[in-house]
Length: 110
Length: 114
Image 1: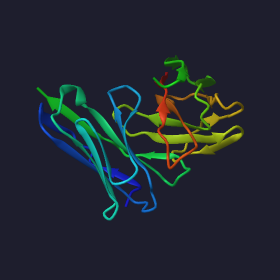
Image 2: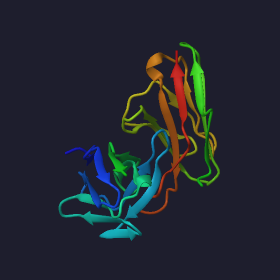
Image 3: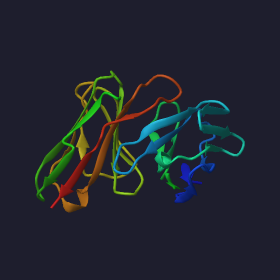
Image 4: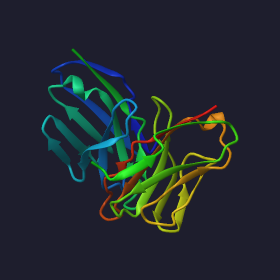
């Protein structure tokens, strides 16, 4: 299994839809996980951190399944402005470089 | 807004030239990283540093070199630019404490070697 694996998409969804992405990871010792958002031709920016079972921020929910070694990102009531690439990030251990997944591309269509 | 800056934002340069991409952060972060990213493709880690005088090569082999003489500064140098070096270079930094900290990115340098 690759260190971090994501479905590249693209996910094309209508406005208002609910969409979910999964990210699988290989290091069972990983303690923290991150979702970043990257807009076209821009730098990645942190969207959410996940340290325990999950995290919720408005329309965004991140969940962690340690047994199956994946994290998910759920976006409810999709907006046009949610169109971006969503990157899953898993540190190799507590003090090592961040490993980025290839990203999942989301297009929200009017 | 993150206090991490990259210069130049765009650079078009001829083959064989030596170039240095600058990256500075004012957050006092010990960890700094350089990533390379082609349009629509994934981020590849090319160099990282955990503090002054510490530098390591990343996952992607790169002909570039880095230095970390000061905490806030992490420049990347290409001794002889080639068209294959054309890409976007992103610098990031993070705090060393905790389980794994948020990485803040600079706006990137788009390098074109002609």
